[in-house]
Image 1: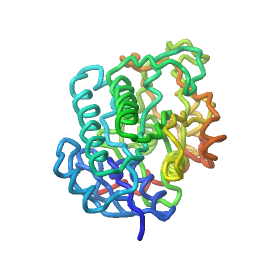
Image 2: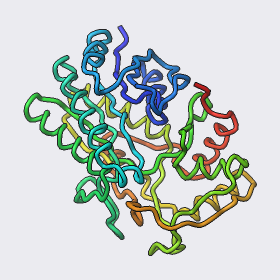
Image 3: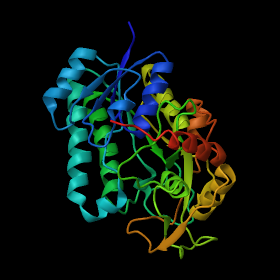
Image 4: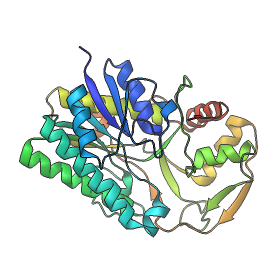
Length: 328
């Protein structure tokens, strides 16, 4: 019998790629998603349970029907600007939703959870290369809510034996190299798809937020990971737990940061087109530089990112972009 994994947010960008990776690894990915930001068309690799994390009855029914061996938890609000304006929305959606999920999983006896956390839990630690032991100092309610969920998982580990692999990762980019799924947000907020929209004439220009950061070219720096490499890491996380390993935190990054200007320049090489640009003020809550310095995922999980270079990330995203994205 195929082992099921319940994937919250499986109709979203990262969740859909994780579902494909799970299917390719021999699991049955069961997407649990309210489709508020996800896409029905993205659910191509297993069944969809349309439900909300606030609906405990729907969660209980999903656990009872599919009896998953593990949970992958992606579902969350994640817009930094919105988190600064409306922190209550983030505490309710991310923390209370996660509490419902964890309690339902524990009651169902599903004690292995892979949690999609974020480097935003570190806050703005300028000049610090981040690893699993770096102090967490989030500067917005998005990062704070994710840190709270990490603490929640630890508490349920102590009280109920729940085991969690926590991935703190950096900027995610790219698309499925085979073109089955990709990034398609409405509204879009991520740098690379916004840049491709500007190149393709779907928006007048790309806005560069802040050119006065204390970096070599004045724009903020991020560590980018290809979404397919990220999905592979999550499958490794499931296997880590099912093999009987204990709870563990892993940073997922390449250790190579790219500034906004460097990403734009790389796009010119990949697409052979210029990027129309306008310049704006810094956004509240944006850190100067976020770069991973960890090798733990490579040495312990055996994670080997294959496509986390800027050429492949932009190239795969560009091919997906030209399909027009999801329709429903």
